Amino acid sequence: MLEFLRGRDVLVAGWGVSGRSLIEPLQDIGARPVVTDGGEKALAEAAELGLGTATCADLLQPDALRRFALVITSPGWRPDSPVLVSAVTEGIPVWGDVEFAWWVDQARIYGPVRKWLVITGTNGKTTTTQMTHSILRAAGIPSVACGNIGLPILDALRRNPGPQILAVELSSFQLHWAPSVRPEAGVVLNVAEDHLDWHGGLDAYAAAKARALTGRVGVVGLDDQVAAALARKSKARRTVGFRIGVPADGELGVVDGKLLDRAFTKAAILAEVGDISPQGPAGVADALAAAALTRSIDVAPQFVKEGLQEHRVGPHRAAHVRELAGVEFVDDSKATNPHAARSSILAHPNVIWVAGGQLKGAGVEDLIEETREHLVAAVLFGQDAAVIAAALARHAPDVPVVELNSGDDARMGDPFTEIEPDAVMARAVRVAAGFAHRGDTVLLAPAAASLDMFADYTHRGRSFAAAVQALDEKDIGRTE
Image 1 (cartoon, rainbow, N blue to C red):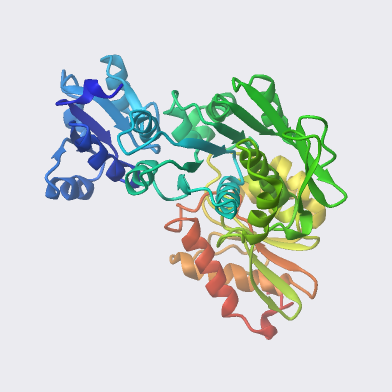
Image 2 (image 1 turned 90 degrees about the horizontal axis):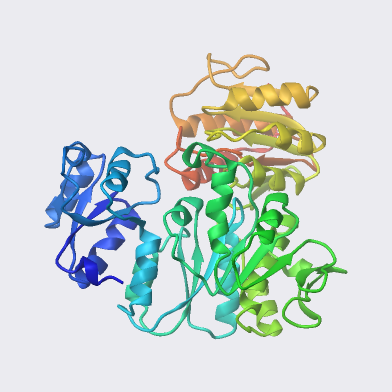
């Protein structure tokens, strides 16, 4: 499949982590990578490594793309990017880095073909990938967690020769550009409004997620309406579901506080709900998904139990930061969309909600309606703070709201601005602490992306944690 690239130029669109991971594999198969990127610094860095480079403007000149046998795009490049549109118009194939990694694996460039366990969904991907990897480790199966979780798949293939299982977290962007991937098993955890500006609508977003359901076994979250609908259209040879409730035949679920498998055996207890981290419905759903994936490749129930017991939630994912004067502070900066924020808020009875950022076209009306009984107050910041504030005014008018976006004071009804994001977060945390009393939870669950203010969601989470650690007891219950 890759022979057509030998001795040919291949355009690498985007000089990020995925773009860098393409270079050695392309060279190993005899192709000549040429890098393009919108940033001058990125092109200079690629040139310093001895790679060919081209600006986007140069590539849009007549016939400029015809030299390339293939374009491999980074997942962040939208389908309507001019260079990609021009390539398609010229009849040049456009792949993503995941598509290329699939064919590198199938061609046995770096050893025997691996079995891919693909994890996707609007929320819970990383936790489920980590749980899956933990179960595989408990079973003594050589495995690597890779993909959107951090380690590019191509790096995993190069660094880990030999038969193994890949626990592959894939975003909708990656799946959009990976039509050939046929995993050993794949799961769609849930599908909610997210990245609609990139995909152009919920249907296209869901269709990208559904590409995980094209292999031997497809797994879907039946408690999610859109994911359940995808189950009916699944192209997998076998499709099973999971639910937080009593499972039917062919499903995994929960009975009397125990995870139960009725899909891959008559009935097998897999784990105790109390052993799952993170606690709460979202964590249990992720555990059921990881159990389904690993049971589909015949991992014994005892290793599912052991792997889930050993798994601990990663940073910025419903992570306990501190308890102060009976108030818990929780960092769920990874809740980057309304669906994730909903699960986070519903896990606590009395929440002072710290939120805001870039909504990316997602609506928050349903989020507010479904969580308003849990909200004590809301402290908002960032690009779309006003959108969230307006939804709160419509659906939860009794919930006090402080919007930190203009002026120079944070008194109720007097929004303000700080130029430095860490200063904004520090102010938000102090204001939130002022609303809190014993038994409450101050929860960072932004419902939005972070890039309007912070480097990424981890920066946002670290900023929150630092602000929390700077508090003392006199800050609790002092509404300004």
